[in-house]
Image 1 (cartoon, rainbow, N blue to C red):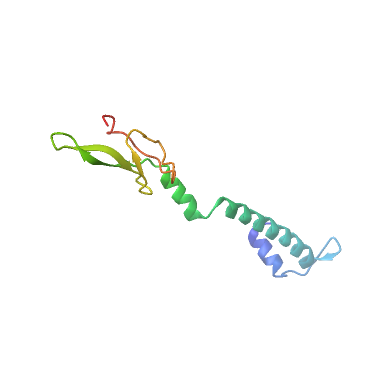
Image 2: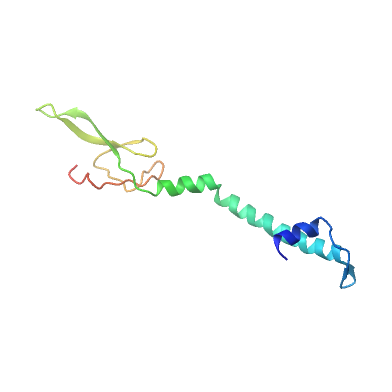
Length: 117
């Protein structure tokens, strides 16, 4: 029985007999079984997360470059880049701690182009 047939069965359509029971009664119980299975499947998806939550998690897996910055200067007045912010949540880290994924939010970090830091 398809989902559409189950919907019709739940609406008590029909009228012929199947196995000694009115057809609509047999279809109703078959439709009820399908409806229960559908609701159980929906519960499984809800346990995983909403579509928006899943999309946000997928976006975090796309590596983004960090926002490099410094809080000091060398003797020539050049800024010393010794900090970076996560591109996902903005959490600040020491440049020596080059995480592949932000420990705070899980955002993947793309370090290409920053090998000399």
